[in-house]
Image (cartoon, rainbow, N blue to C red; front, top):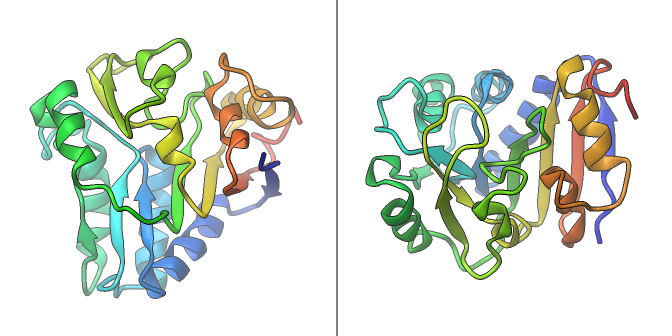
Length: 222
């Protein structure tokens, strides 16, 4: 069991950016996520460390859309991170265009055998992580490293996601959550015991170091 370490920051995206840049500089393996707050961290990380030549990146989840679709998590990273680097990392993209079943199977074959150095995640207002939504088939999966299934919120397109056991197969997990609309999810995920109704809380069930980076608004209910 890994109890969470809560970090309240006036600049949460910058705090995460420093960590991403540090791991990239060391040539580590990083799992990226989607979302506007993550995008802000990617912009800052590229400024801090423009050479990601020795790093390898994967994704926690992806929507089942093409890589150039505005809803794509890959496209977010391409625009906010990769285009600003002097040297890009080795990229392992989830092929959402294959659909949830074939896309999940294809991605499973690309995963590393060793532990990730860092898994970076956001937290939904319903406490979902990656595309592991409350009461979803992806959240219930324990035998496979990647699962496909329905979305739990808008946009309602199918998703591909690393499963909970795969996310926990990391040396360190960092969750970024900002804004008052995330305060209840932060409290439910990290101020109590693990509970399937709040997927974020299940990150406590592994051995990875668990850091939760929040602003004062998201910290409000703790």
